[in-house]
Image (tube, rainbow, N blue to C red):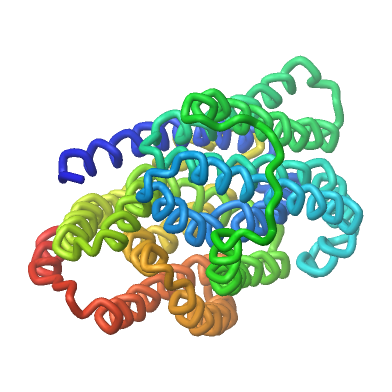
Length: 454
């Protein structure tokens, strides 16, 4: 793939993510108007994160990393029937597993919330449990949708899969608009309507990808084969990858548990700050990592090391040129940006200050988050999921230690700063291991360009 085609793929994904993130920003603006940084906001954000944490393990991330290289290997043989059957087999097994997991999540919502939200008072805890039960079916939908998107990305489709999140945001925004017609409803009733809209959005996210899959050659039938060597190969790589992601998610879970011990509004403030930070990260960092995984898998299969080196250097330098100035802009103008976007309704001055602090400390890690997401796919492309696991095991210990140490002095801001510092350390470890496993790759010229950008 030429640089032009790589830029085109990244551009398509970036455009789609940009639309999705902008709609998500509008959604958050309306949400902040109604719920601000109150216990209602804390309860929703906490409930929303629980199925998302599990989805990242089984619906995407580790599964995509294990699945895509195998999928590209089969595609390289030219056997389309085998390719389709392999894809259907993974989708069928995933659907069954996610369905069971969703049912268990609904049944055990109470113990789950009490375990990971120990700092909540009884009212907030009970509301979080109710919202978790409403949202948990989203796990099945988004987990399945994420794998559908991985398949489409492998076939070079990026824009339509990328805007699927747009439909989720439309559904959630629609529910908030309904609030204006049910203004007499209790606040807790409004947040429940909002929670249910997540499931509606998940249905839309899944359905929008089906026509393209049909065009590729997929027919929507169950195909279950637990004995195929391709499936066994995916599972062997998926398990260590899942453990690695589980370790990473423990970091996020630790953030939530510790934030629940802080003053009311801390979880909401961290969420607002993280969402704004995710806007440039999603448009550029995540778009690049999504576009390069199929490409890196192809280069590794064909042993095109010079092409892999060239595209990696191009991606890292491009991200640095974008993310370093973006970080400075956020630090300088972040408070004004939050004021313009969210300062209305029940979102008060205290919520503004708390959200700004979280945004600034999260943004310090922008360039590290982005480059990490670009480097990790190289290990996955080489069917090496064990190395990221080892690195993640070290990272989780560092992150939790930093969390506990910094929150004592900076409260919720300390949790955000710990995340950024951990991302920097993560990059250093990834770079060391990349040189160890891929000594043929040279990175001359990257550091001078990053320094110029800085």
